Length: 129
Image (cartoon, rainbow, N blue to C red):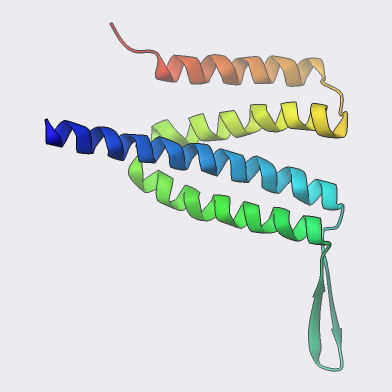
């Protein structure tokens, strides 16, 4: 019984990490775009200067955090399972965030692509009877 509880807790923690990864990925992308600054690198008097807006910096930090979590997640799950699912979810949620936050237009191709991704994620998680 105790072994089952440990396994369930470990699995729960793994899925929490996936959700945090997805949130950090989308936050990073959205904040970098909101910051509107890709950063600038210059050299003056032998010093290297790097400039970036505060919002873009927070987005960059979120994106680095998502990358670090992703390196942990791919070790925890089967790579052929977790990569398409995480990538698909991030793509669809980024499409939705771009519509809501940036008022970007959905194209027919974007809607068809998102639908195919959603169907693929569902099929990958479909329990075999």
